Image (cartoon, rainbow, N blue to C red):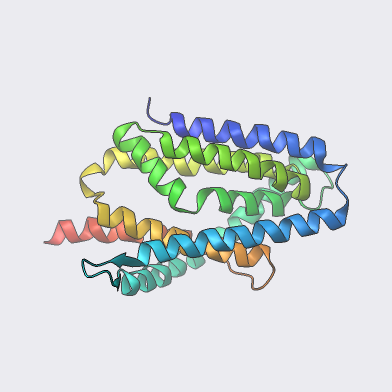
Length: 242
């Protein structure tokens, strides 16, 4: 069943988030701050490792060779321009505030929890590659593993950022489900190179999310999301004109 991996992922986030809400009142504020810093560091490492894995390959001579760097820069710039024009980040914030007003009342961290968790869960190689494999081959191994990781992190996120984390499951459902459906339609265009480039851009955005969590620099990661799909769009146009 195509899409099963995303459904399992959403359920894991909701269950993990619910446990976090239960635990929230028992965790002192200073512990929450330290936990968020630890998560931020972990996300930075995940982003760096994924980006380096996407950029570097080992040659037959045992040396490192760089790939896709020029493309990555162009994809990030083009995608960011598109996202800025569409004001995706503002849209996510407005959605979070709407959910907050509708379901959470005066909880001040609702929108932050929704946006932060949504971006962490939908940006990255596992979300992209896992959803593509689900749509192309019906394989859910990657998304099942991602569901376990997301469920565990949802406990910590919701314990520190509140109920907004649970609603991030909707973002995962729409995003990963959309990629799964799209994969079935665009199967001939999804070469290994295109998937690798999409994963590379996703890893760079994961790094930006980690820096946001550490409050080192505020990146509008939401506005950069279209960059992930620029390699696919480029491949589509290339095949049309060649």
